[in-house]
Image (cartoon, rainbow, N blue to C red; front, side, top):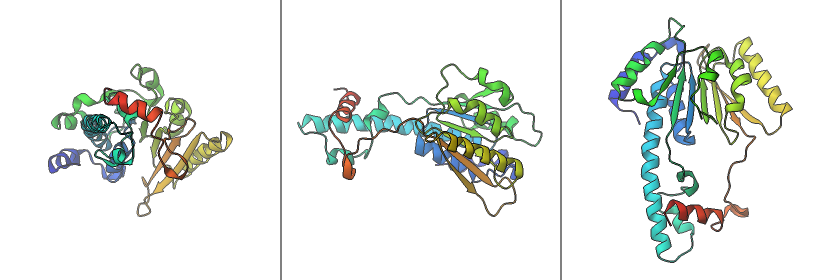
Length: 267
């Protein structure tokens, strides 16, 4: 996904004490996997260009997939055949037409008040400019406690929030309602293996128990590190994921799926 020129450009942002050398490409993979439309980062640095570049790549992929999906659907419908498994597995395989009905125009907002002397946040825009990606991020120069009112109009629900700051508890309490209820992700850095972070994790777990169906939580530990050594991923689940499956894993090709396929193909 990232060529030598990208790696060379972003290397200047890497701060060994920040512990994000593996986190950054992992976040980019999350973008590839979940294809978020609105992404919020709190705490700029080495992770920022990975997120921005991943969104740019997904945007190109979605555009190509949408055209190919419309073509294969039209070709299938022109034969007079109903939608079937041959249609599903033809390239681009497994694509749900409903996802492509809305243009994929992702928004990325990064929040940082540039107050940490050892952070590389102040160099991020220069690096993004060298990669031709500077126009893909809106930077809010503010503390997280002040930034909610500064978010762009319509910047909700948030599909992916990455918080690499000490204000994780404040963010959870004051921004959770902005996370997409249909599986939006809140990812926070380094809450395991120190007392205050463990207290935050206990608090979030209690919220989950008090509100069944509201969230799923998983902690990922880097056991070879003494600190800056974990990710906490919270998935909001109060919405409902779409399903086209019948019992036995068979797809329901009629009704909504067919309507969306016809619309996406311009029929």
